[in-house]
Length: 336
Length: 259
Image (tube, rainbow over all chains, first blue to last red; front, side, top):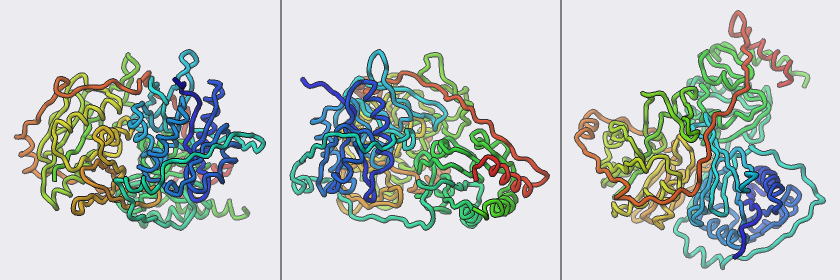
């Protein structure tokens, strides 16, 4: 019987680029592989998968499995599950990692139940137990108020990893690796068997800096009181060349689009500067922003939980604080 | 239309983090006595989704809850909102199951119920945030699963789902029976009417224990739970009035090279 060996990462490509979470996963996989003296492999799907093989090798992979099939160009649960199940039975990895992304949170549980193994989602830390050589998986629970450590006796040991939990390795263009092209079943046959069909897609366009890429984010909460209030936050964001986001209540109320929600079930962001206005600081929100370098909180409630997480705070009504804050910032940044 | 909604009773996720403690086994979160229990909020959105379908097409909604020590008025809330029946899988052995064992037990209960067109779950439970059980139930039952629904519509013998994406949504069509997990973008759950609350009081839940439902071994082992140590100290910016504080904050941020 073959042994389960190596760390396998499912790579993600979006908008023609390797997703940053893939680089983070490869860095994490590299640490685990070095401690186990095993190899890192990366699976890439889609007709342009080979464009990224050198990049994932430079970022830490020893082996790349390519499934260059146009049926896999966009994520679809059934086709991806089908293809990945085959890759796992071929590669028999000891550990299998996904990003806690839209794709990872949908696909990883499907595969775990299909393979009849355990899975720990949204991990912040992964390490190898020095005695047992098994994977220790740490995830936040109770909205981040506590953390839980899990292990599993089933192989592959599977985990999804929170975005930005690991920093990518510097690219090493001199690294070499093996590239293996794999073929799965005739796509037409597979397509005929699909039980779910994607029949439409609507992408919300939002002008302005993208949250994931922004160095400065201004985030508003329930305390902003309505869509008009967010105009003031947009003005602040413009001065700092940043983006505007929201906690869950403004999105649930329809003041802001759901795609701008920051938090456990929205976007996870790690800007250099995070200015939170009228946000109470629920753990569900903090899960999405606690990695920010500097957090500034403005809230009228001195007891608000957000002050426990912030570096700088002002207790006051944002309507009174922001105009002077913005004016002063304009003055300070006008030479820049 | 026969709809089953899986609802989990959890510790109220809105309680302050300082009220959470870890017990002496190092594996369990405990709270002061009297802390409120609620149905996981995402599951309440799933109940709302079921009620909206029933409003249009009529049918029967069965609520299925897995756990132990259920607070009757909490688990009866979906009945008060308009669901028809409540089945409690209640046993000490059902406490603290991992996603695998929970999905296994719920799938066994659903097979025992027998008739279903649609199974709805919240996108994840607001305590352990695993987001696995719904998908697991579908895998055990061999039916399609669609996650993160913000809208659900029955179209003839199929179901059409608006599925939330990071920057919008996609529309997915699948066959019935199917399992769908629901996200809060679907909209707020309705309030129970006084009539509904009174009707729910009169209903007796069906209770199944471990002799009725087979239990499988967990596939992930909880080793320990701990509370992270916070090192941050917030510097409060104070001044005679809010505007002055705002200006002072800007200067402080410049000093800290944050702007």
